[in-house]
Length: 130
Image 1 (tube, rainbow, N blue to C red):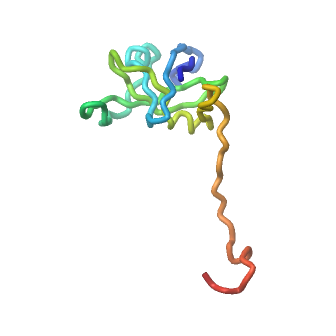
Image 2: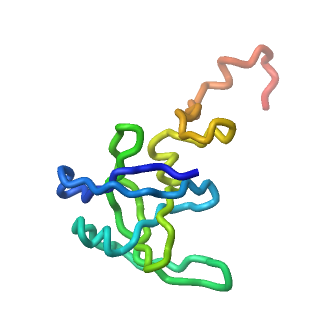
């Protein structure tokens, strides 16, 4: 599924560039071409190794602002090379609290879970120790 998304440099949030990206729930990180990120002034923070078809590749990784469904968040982003497809990965979807509705082919609010620590001693009905 493809979506239109806004992309911006968190240090200059007023300048937004629109990109078309593939939503890939099998990809951990999002990917945008290097020239687009450099145009926005986004800088790499580190270089990472990724498994790709036919072996491994190294790519720069930074942080960029992303606009989806009217919301803004900062997400990790891979500096794509020429020929790399723009991708919205699962890390960005989780940061936004979104998931893919595969039936309708759209992004939707995810059901979010929260782990809460509970005093199990007070909740258990018997006095038997665990």
